[in-house]
Length: 233
Image (tube, rainbow, N blue to C red; front, side):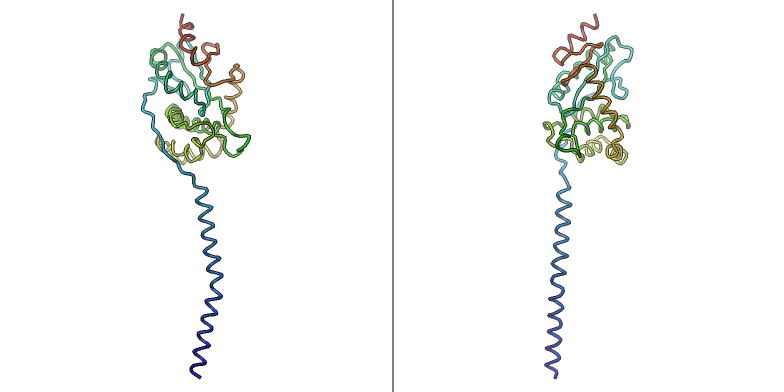
């Protein structure tokens, strides 16, 4: 009798293990699938460069210099535009030193965001979102710092340089209030501002970036210095 009872108990244990096996397998698979989903949604931030340059002496929002200066310059630029990045890295420091800080010119940056890939990715247009992020930084008094960190971290057009995770990381690097910035960016708070800025650039006859209005005259970066000099005369 004893042996029969022992055999029955062993069979019951074996059956329980068999019954639990599918549950364990399903549970394990569910965990693996969940991890895969989470990992695929996490995009690496990558390297972030910090610009080492001084701002203009006088800044206010999206402007630099004395509003009463004789020459008014407006820059139309897309944060993804390689030529705009080249102007920022090469000529802009000279413009700031020779014309803006000297009180000769008043400078305004006007986003012209048209290089994004909205036609193929309606969830994230890098040109538009970078401009929106710059406006969000402006809400916290750091437009020009964000402007600089965007240009120094260009990686080609629509290549992920201005993915959401990177824009948030830029804000953190600049010691912005991360929660406020994230809420601003995700809510599309400044989407209309970007749309209006695009309309303004087009309305002034701009169809390339960077382009500049110098006292109302549209010029390219190669003509900028001469146009300012002519306006000063």
